[in-house]
Each structure stands twice: as structure tokens, then as C-alpha cells.
Figure (tube, helix red, strand yellow):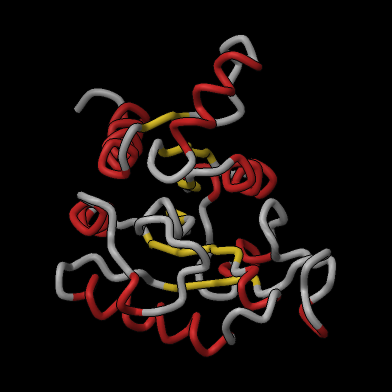
Length: 198
């Protein structure tokens, strides 16, 4: 069994850019490569699961998504922070064009991309996590059966404030972390706690 960290992309790993697809617009958020490396060093697999409605809307092609992911991994590999696999959903049920206008199982909060990962990894759900900056990210993680972190980058801090007010403190995610580095630390601390004292 393998421990997997499922990762949203935009607003979680990199700066939120409106329909990011060009390499020159990619900017990793502060501390992300170092935190990814820490997780890798502890034996976690790193898997990106990203909705890419820009493909569905006709703003860019699937090859642009694949090329961006190749470029991301080139940069991350130099820092020992390589992503093990990228999955993306190119569909949208309302705004898609042609074959991309469809209700699919892969678009988060659906679990199709998580299930695709099972073709490559024997996922240990009890010790795996989903990190994202939107409710649909944590909903997808919950739907799949892993623990979840809402990260305060991207849209996360605003969502967290709203959730504290709307839910009376009963939050729909397991952990809130201000930064991706904090999210990695929380996961690693949880792992240590589950092992008990040495």
C-alpha cells in the first residue's frame, strides 16, 4: 500500500492565474517545492488532480495542459520535488464545447481522477490526503475517502473564514493550513502522532 498526497494545482501549488496554460505564467507559491520534497522524503507519492475547464471552454488544448505539467516537473525535479503523476479533467457540464460538454465522473468533486491514480498506485486511503484551496477539492477528497487539508493560499483563506461563520466551527475539512508548507507539516505531524511515542 502507498501513501498518496493528492494535490490541487492552481492556488495550491502555483499562483492562481486565470486559466493558466502558458509556461511563462507559471509561478510556484512560496515554500511549495521544499514542502513537496519533505513529503517525498517521507515516502509519500505526489499526485496532482486538477479541473481544467479552460480546455472545455476552448481557451487552450489538452496538449497545452500536458506541456505545462512537463515543464512544472522539470522545475520541481531540480529541487527533489517531482510530482509522480498528473491527472486533469478537461470537461465542463455547462460551458464545454463539443465533446468536452459532458457530465463526467472525473471533474472534482467527483472522484474519477483519484480512481485513475489507482491504476498506478495501491492507495492506502487511511494514510493518504487531499490538499486544495477550494471546497470542491476537499469534497472530492472526502468523497474518495481520504483526509483533507484546506490551504489558505488561492481561495482558501476566504473560504475558511466563511466556513467558520456558516458552520459554527464544524468544518468540512480535517485540517486548515495557512500555507502549503504548513499543510505538509500538519500531515507529517499527524503521521508521527499516529505512530505513538518511540
